[in-house]
Image (tube, rainbow, N blue to C red):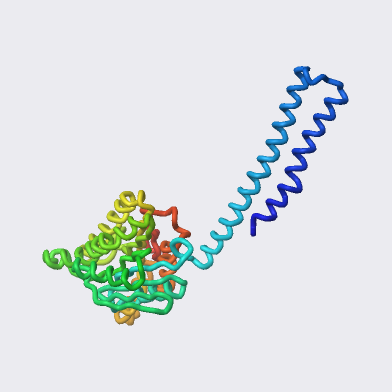
Length: 327
């Protein structure tokens, strides 16, 4: 419907102009009394034909180009406002999360209310699809459990369009007190958990030549931050490297792989710690905005990366930290 005005414009303006050009040149030839056999006559005839064809082709090109721009600018605006997910339909999103993590639950809620089907999980998996949900236990350190959870989601909803790797644990321990088991546990959940989920979901995305993977890392993987975070920071930094390399490897399958690095957000998991006003103020002084983030301020970034608005982004890291890393 949006192309009809351009088609009408072509009929009313471009075609008459081309016809008028041809008639004007032919009339000029008659006035000059030039014979058909004359070389100049042939040149003028060819010139008239070319002029008419050029104007007509220009009208056709303008019609299709204007229609294309109108359609795509309208979609782009809708994406920026409504953040529609992959393609034009509803997306099935798998979100491995800690079961007690308020931030993850908020991401899942934002996905659901934004019109996006969500599979939300951790060690607990929930899938939201137009008001319906699937819940199943899943430990991201157990490959068979990951495979089962993905299979259950596919059986319930057909496929998985977006994977958000947000399962994670944190433990503050001085480096010299870290045991091999402590370090390996941190890597197993925070890094290899994402690897397992990608390997389970990847074949689905590769088969349909489309998909979005969003790895939730941390600014702890970018900067040296808190005492006792060596193992956690190593795992989160590894997740960023994994994101970049997988983005390159799977770009040929039209799969976008990006990462988000949150700063310090107040959630259910850390709320008890920030009840201490002195600790909270100490942390807030490191942040340019002088306050902690809220889960509502992170979820839209994940929604953006899950939407078609980010179709030309891959291997990117988006930092959402209130300015902590720029100070």
